[in-house]
Image (cartoon, rainbow, N blue to C red; front, side):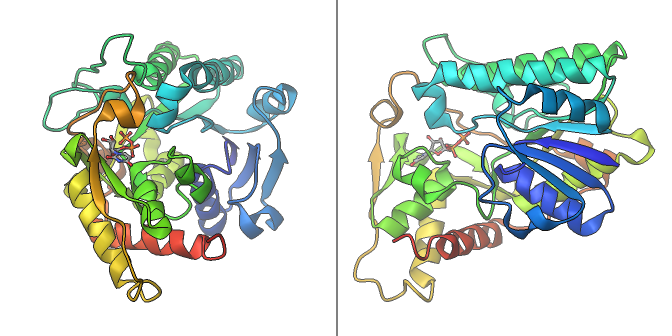
Length: 342
Ligand code: UDP
């Protein structure tokens, strides 16, 4: 099987590529603007990498869409801080660039495995979010945070419409707060534009205060990336075509915790780390309003928990990593990645 991964150096892209190369005989064609997460897989004979930009290298993309069996368009800005700071940039990249790729897949009748997002459920009040039942709830236009959710939702709808009319085959997957090695860089965290787990770890490393937005009562289900990749591998394999035209949540409902609990656990793990157990001081945990942390365009999701019955049934998949383990592995690898930086 030949796979095209756009955004191959991204968090999901590089973990997936490593797994594909290690466990299958599939060939991966990948493009990204950077290669810093790829390491020595660039030398693998079954991996063909182009350093390029999806807004520029369109001929390369069309050629490879035509050539490959499955297309994964993973290029997107997926950090809430940037949704409110640069909504136009998010729209241009996340929607405009991706719709072009989808149209290429339609032209050549390809299979698309597309990253939707748990963000599409927005402020849905269901206890657990179900792919084919839950309402997708977003706030008013002034709350610019929702631009990402809307971009993903519209792409989901367009892909669904093409797929159910026979122009493409698709599987939409919805990651729920995947975490793990190389999630975000220390640089992103210094800018304050990292996702919460890496932001808190970087804050601990830099001895900056950990900021709980609006008291930190919001809940998320943190999912270890290896579990997510297990599911994604089964989606790619698509045994007996079970994933055809399906939407699948990929998250760990057992790993639910509030942002305040998250801060406490990460601080504890950091204080027990061999290199930091004798530090003179540790970050304090403080509170801030969402308006002063993110600005007026922000609005939050109070509880985001997946129903994963579909993934269990279709993929015979069950997430394995508990919350403590997942956080420990993420923290340890972040400290290892940045041991020279500070
Ligand atoms: N958050 C926080 N402090 C931070 C960064 C994030 O309290 O320094 C909160 C944020 O308001 C949200 C949650 O952590 O409720 C998760 O944020 P993240 O950026 O990881 O993405 P989300 O899960 O909202 O997509």
